[in-house]
Length: 299
Length: 299
Image 1 (spheres, chains in turn green, blue):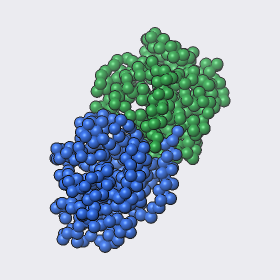
Image 2: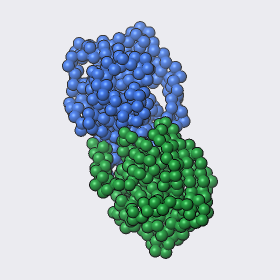
Image 3: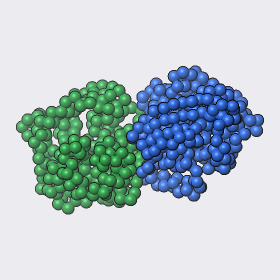
Image 4: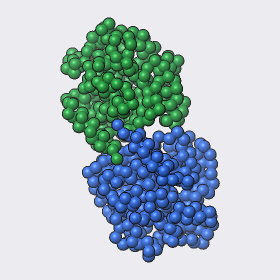
């Protein structure tokens, strides 16, 4: 089955203790699509400026990503710059230039409105709602969000939450959204907001899934080399939703496997700068690491 | 097979956001013994003052802990007081009264010198060495350590490391000891110091085992209620070594199971104040949570 992602398409400038890169292809929809495209056909809905590089388009097409919903507007592409601390656990935003993304009003192409599997990247909750209004029956919709919407658009965020199947959220934001400092209670409180599945992402500490009555916990894949954590969360979401879409199921067992595939894909992403680590992957390479991950946690 | 633990026996005063308790039974050897005694017979080597409460002795005897190596000296028992932050992730030491523990020179009773499985609790490395010198052939020895010995007694610590089978260490201390900020590299560097098995404890984020070429990662057991994290590391060590001793094996599969039992025992400890959570446990209760933990991480 195919997948639709709505989110940012960006040019990222990143500094980590291991180097510095300018204007790399990035954005939530891009990381998601490059990850998910290893599992199922992906359509991007997003916006870029007329300065968006041709080779970035070529790279996405090369992964068979459907770009019919990628609008090009006169102006600059969304740009973001950030710097990571020495231990990679903190990052500072150096600049954010929204450019054409500021006026982004997602329009789902007609042929894409019946896509069964949807990921609502981290955009304003009112836009996420608007996307849901444009979709015909969906089978499984997951969403991302962040602190500024929890602070500034809580009611709209709760409206979206009540209409999706899964929320992917990082640990500090799960605590903020629920008002609970205990992660199990935080995840359960979010379920009570109307979202049956909650995936709490803890970065290098792995993640925690609650799915109705069930719990699943997974460590991160241990790596000797982490060059750039940018996009890890969206890459995780891509592996997760990619596996759900290709399996055409969202039963608890599939969701557990989906967390493992998300973890594996994120591990490839952070080993290199930008999206580099997601290029050149093959099914064999992915399955090999998936099996290593299963071995890592088995007892 | 039986187990020997050398470490502190203390009276702890603890404040957490959920309450305050004074002069509870505590200390590394106590948490270890109460945990491990569910798996194998345990002997404690330690020291207490003549003010050590009778009911604490009774409680340990009740768990069949062998106290022949527990010396009583004239003076006060080791006392420690600490306060946890609201999110339980930081703790402040309010006072440390070493009392008779200051002069502790472990003497292993003759009958205990041939114990096969040994845990060297967090005491001065020179004392840990001295314990090893008193032991006949051992099958598997694990040690704990902490930042003050890494800073102040590094060479002695390295001498102990070269003579034990396993180090249990928390993540920040693993980084400090190895000088590596990446945990996989830190664990491998510690192996190269002569210790084939390294268990890196990450508190609420679980733990990471390297054992020769193998890696195993486990999350913590998710809990809705954490009342007091004191002693979690030593309780983990007790479950770990207890399973190793009862299985009489230290092959990689046993060590993986040992991490899981350690995790399970630690989860019982932190649900209550002090050692309360370790009392009243039965094999059935432990196995039930062990199976729930296996289910938690399976995919």
